Length: 313
Image (tube, rainbow, N blue to C red; front, side, top):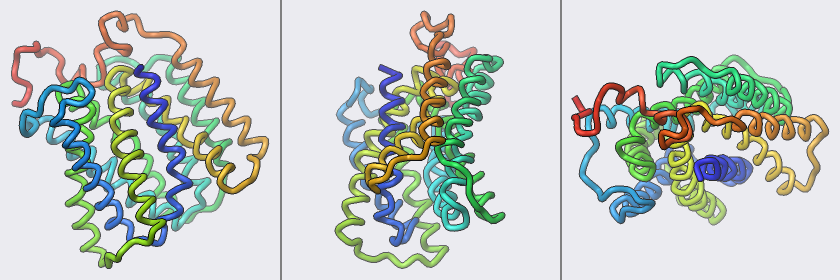
């Protein structure tokens, strides 16, 4: 189930990338603020209803969780979108995709460190293979200095999105982490839009439909699926599935544009598939403890505390 959740989230993300062509002319931060506001309302209703076995709504999160949620909103939502848009304006999409494709390697390194463990060789090899496969899928292109820096910022946002969420997931669950993160991202984006002088306007029919899709599928569905899987697989193993996004984006764009991918891109897809199979082929010994990746992504943050102790000091 955890594997299916992570895979579903990244497939939805990959499908969404070509579809966002429909909103390239809309004010970026204003549009994203609307998207996250709609998603926050929907996720809040799901959380109150106890969707997915979540505990009933119990007010605001504790200080430690709130700081992690602010990190998710600032880096993985608001920061990610600003860096992404800046990057594609100053660099070829191929360059941006190749740099962001290094996210599995970053998560493979950071995930075990969060549990005070060394990264496993199997996960590292799989992550490097996914980075190589992603590079083949995207190819290489041109970029100026600002475009490269923005792409690196997008990579940091992609990694931070999962790392910060991992801290709050054990206590809050996937739905509430998603709801709080989206709600916190809205004022950040609104302030950013005001600071940069964005002028809101009524979206066209295509833009409205695209924002609706992004709010429902990419935010509500994909966020909950990703965080649910990440909470069980852990950051390192779950991060491998990030490699599915560029592959799915390639397939979707090929169908949408009516053209076949080049041979190098097909080889890249196969490399990613082999890497995922290899990286997920052997479970950690601690999986029998109830989670598929040791004690889960938030284990180290909560290390040394029993279930009956406070964790908000």
